[in-house]
Picture (cartoon, one colour):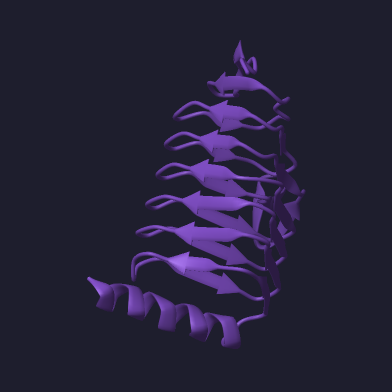
Length: 175
């Protein structure tokens, strides 16, 4: 059991010194099938944990200012910029992409992309199989239901679901 954690740590060290720049506190790879590929800048202020088959691929800038847990087979692919402004739980098979392939007429360019930054606020829970597309801002205290597609900004303090994701409930602080 501990041998798997040791292998994950060695793998992280290799990625840390072979790929791009990394600054911050902690990236935990909790399974040998987790993938971290950094060719530009990653800043982790607190903690990033990647579970089985989860991947973080950074060719742009990724800033993590909270505690982030990325569950099984989820992926975050950064060509431009993805920022997590606080704590977030990312369920299984979630996709966060800040880019699309460039399309001109009926021709798809496989080598170039259109990009727009993504911002995710604090205290966010992304349910299973959620997809977040480029140019989206997700506010604080947000829950996104399973199988939702986030193609527009989501305001703070709400539960969102559907394709495209729309508000289904307002969250009220009961303290």
